[in-house]
Image (cartoon, rainbow, N blue to C red; front, side, top):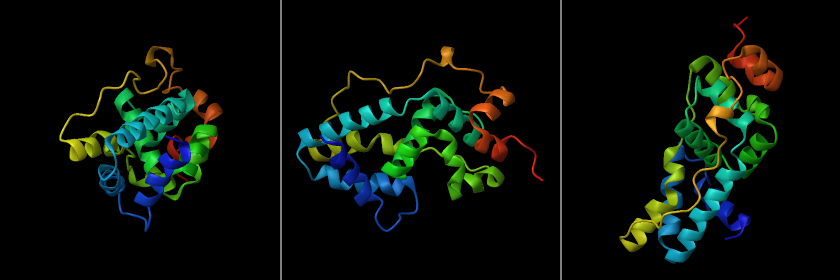
Length: 177
């Protein structure tokens, strides 16, 4: 599956601005479940590639700041939330994780404490495959791409966070004025 085809499914699922990543996932599942099972598998394998490409240490640090902590599974689910926000948001976050400070929802989270995770986006292909075939989605040889947690810099080091992610740090680490 080509990148444009993968994102076209997400674009159609986000049309008319659904209220939640869960709704995005529901719409994408419905579209994919009507397709040939091989296409569903190809979409799922492309999702694996997107997760691998977005498995960056500084993006994990951004998720850690925004969500008030972030486990391995939490990082995967954070990237699910990014995917539900579309190609441009994800690509911008991968290029410059600190750019997430410019999103209205992230700015609001600094005061509301909202957490951004969307596990349901990560299960679009298996759900669609189950609906289409009645069978389990074929296992992937590729685990979600992410850095080794043992090799991460200390996300609790506020000075390092401030140096690497200054805009997000000013939202989430500095006391409010």
